[in-house]
Amino acid sequence: MIVTSLKTMEEIRQGTLLSWPSGLNLDSWAVAWGGRGYGAGDTFLRPYFWNSIKMVVPAVFFSTFIGAMTGYVLTKWRFKGDQWVFLFLLFGCFIPFQAILLPMARTLGVLGISNSVVGLVLVHTVYGIPFTTLFFRNYYVSVPTELVKAARIDGAGFFKIFFKILLPISAPIIVVTIIWQFTQIWNDFLFGSTFSFGEAAPIQVALNNMVLSSTSVKEYNVDMASAIIAGIPTLIVYVLAGKYFIRGLTSGAVKG
Amino acid sequence: MKTLKIEELSKNFGSTEVLRKIKLEIDEGNFLVLLGPSGCGKSTLLNIIAGLETINEGNVFIDDYNVSKVEPKDRNIAMVFQSYALYPSMNVRENMIFGLKQAKTSKEKIEEQLEKVSKFLQVDQLLERKPSQLSGGQRQRVAIGRALVREPRIFLFDEPLSNLDAKLRVEMRREIKKLHQQLKTTVVYVTHDQTEAMSLGTRIAIMNHGVIQQNDTPENIYNKPSNMFVADFIGSPSMNLIKGSLKESSGEILFTASGSNVEIPIKDYEFKDKSNLNNKEIYFGIRPEHIYFKKSNEIDFEINLRANLSEYIGHEQIITFDYANQEILAKFPSTIKIELAKETKLFFDVTQISLFDAKTDERI
Ligand SMILES: Nc1ncnc2c1ncn2[C@@H]1O[C@H](COP(=O)(O)OP(=O)(O)OP(=O)(O)O)[C@@H](O)[C@H]1O
Ligand SMILES: [Mg+2]
Image (cartoon, rainbow over all chains, first blue to last red; front, side, top):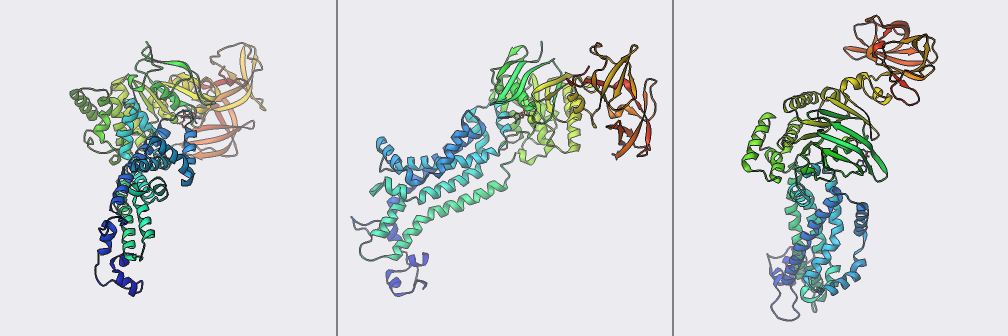
């Protein structure tokens, strides 16, 4: 893919798939990112890339945070019917995307945030909560409840215990959750294409439009560059978070 | 005034009854050990005293003040846990002063307390370390320190030594004993280790299935168990319980084991109720350490039993004898030579026996 993206169209038409490009030709990257500069009908990734960022950052943040909260409540503040909530959430993980499209569309319509980045943030947050909750629940189950008891005797309340005692030892699971949620949300196509179009679309939808709707000639080099641009953030998250992940595991921060 | 008083306390988790009509009183400065097999409700009782569990029925009083609905932090208690429960993200200093900070104690007072307690427990060199950088013994010291700085009315311990290795456990046990001697604060201490209970407690409450079986001094728990559960639970190996019946003849009370014709006269035994003893079905309880190889008191009862099995455990040996088809264990110094498969002359110390009603399992 990288090789192809560096070729000119001329080279692609002549050469075989595996031949090397004549030089570093970044034109196709520029086109993919910034367009050719002639007005209507010119689709390029930059605005959609930012759409995606604006969508993915809050959605990952909220779904991770809420998941941590609910995971904490489910394991450390047992209440009547908590097993049912847990079962319900487990069930939530198995609901296919398609099943919640219609009810979601209605909800967004009622809230007046359909076809907007805010709407997508909401959709992804809600859909992600069962997963993030399960991640955190499974992590917090292994944290001794005596920790919470000790803190209660010391006079810490619900939120203080969460922020001062549990959250600081949650780095590994936060990283796992972020990787998972980021990958899911960034690469999502279905929600994006259903709940947004035109200007508010995230990058995956734009990429699809770009690749499929190119009218005249197939510009493989631009397509390849676009696909790579769309994939880079996930890669970055893996590399950065992966490092923290290992660090979190090896520093022995988990066990008291 | 009782430092701690528990009245008719019951607790269930859903349909399982965990504590039943618990009654307990502790005088100021006492060291009460809750002892019982796993799952009998010791931790639940301790958590209720701390306010970490709700109550279904009954009340808890601290200094005559009903605390049944009071938050843990306001009960004037401190607790030390089996897993130490040190906050992993905080260093030793932060761990120890966390409670005081929550209580909005003044900076000077916090520093003063921290210095005093950390010196006292010899953790003043470790203040900047994280719990993960401490050994098990050090962690337990810090956990105790965290409880001490609060200067509570009552210390609650939930099996604080059971995560330590055997040697360290004995050391820490002595330190806790010293601590109590110096501070004289009231303690409630949960364990399922009877040696720990015996050596630490000024009072021991034996629990089984959510009921307190006996609440007494260590001496009485050992010498005068109030029922067969306590008799069997305390001591290692546990008390021999020989099935048989009593007979009253010409003012003397005699015990005969089932299937035997040897009559053992019961002398100097404090019966709770002297009536209706004739033909009573009972268990005759005698501890392995109260069966002697040499006669030591005039009153000792001489009996010939066949030795079947010998277990050597260093300074002692445990010999299994046959007594009318019932197994009897006896403990002797290992210097004594006993031949197996032969009749051996033994002496029962009848001043040390316990008798139990075979129907109710209660001491008579
Ligand atoms: N939160 C809970 N929900 C349901 N049952 C519980 C709960 N906590 C404890 N139990 C049950 O209550 C009983 C008493 O438990 P508890 O922890 O008090 O026992 P324990 O005497 O401390 O035992 P151990 O020596 O093993 O610590 C057990 O049968 C246990 O399964
Ligand atoms: Mg317990």
